[in-house]
Amino acid sequence: MVLLILPPAICLHLKDAIIKIGMWGAMVGTLHEIVMPPTPTDLVSIKIKSIDTIDRLTFTYKDTTGTQTTMSWGGDLGDDHPEFKLNPNEYVNHVYGTVGPFATQGLCYTVNSITFVTNQGRKYGPWGTRGSSDAAFDLPLEKGRIVGFYVRADNFISGIGFYVRP
Image (cartoon, rainbow, N blue to C red; front, side, top):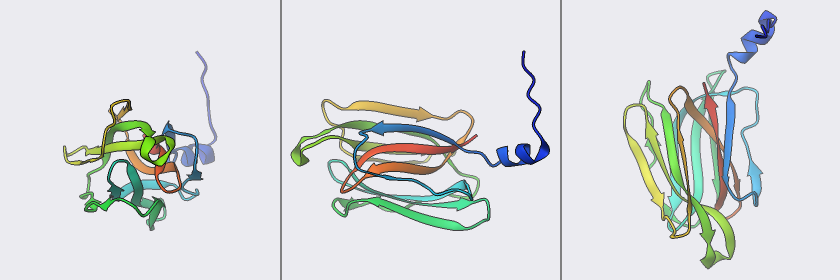
């Protein structure tokens, strides 16, 4: 057994740590990430544009300074879906969807469908359309919460990953 003793300054920093999980989908398109510090602490809202694939992801998060920041990545096609606002003490602890070919646009892979579930049992989605040859992804979090996203995107969301606070 190894015992690791960290100085207090490092321990203080680790309490604000987040974990980066994923990416599901293609490694093509422009990489969009949250610039840190400060690190995200809570997801405030999510908004999706989609028809056959996920065209745009917009979300607002609160960071360690209490500031709310909105990020919006992807294209302008697709239908606007209602914004999903999280209640106090509510957080996203499960996300699932599919990735696969988007042949009509000549793209090898995009995020084709996505659903978000909260600790209070509310669902946002499913948005997009699962294709017959899609691969599924599923991220249930027993302990932890999704506090932000990073994507590869240009006109569509090609790949998606998640920032998780343990």
